[in-house]
Image (cartoon, rainbow, N blue to C red; front, side):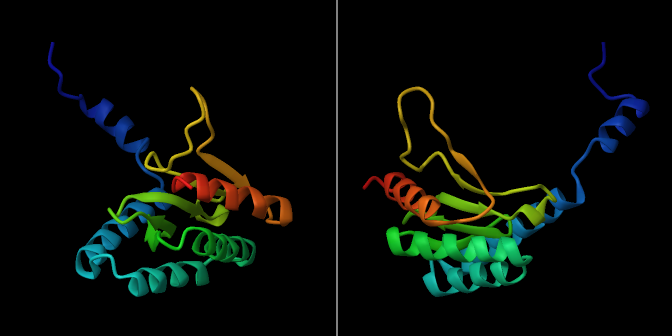
Length: 155
């Protein structure tokens, strides 16, 4: 039996492809990778790109992303600010993303997300959270974010 897709299968696969938001994120990531190669871990350039990304967000996302930026830079100054798929992110000295913010408006979902990548040291037994929904950031959420960021970098 041939493993080639029939014209009908190919059409169905194409119809189930990436959304416009996903395509946009992938294009943003390709541009980021080119910029990263040129900047070579340039903190100022990374922060400029991150702040530009925040400035383009809608009000609620913008406020959340700005507060996340403040909390991460205060609690993990060794992380490099950058964008990752067009969203604010923070990488270690090896360039690996440790944590990131995803705006609700980016994919038209009801909440923003603050997430962690596998290089973050959040391990707790056999099960732990790597992503957190955000609707607002008050004192309790700030304390939790501080704790998560410090744990992620091994403090």
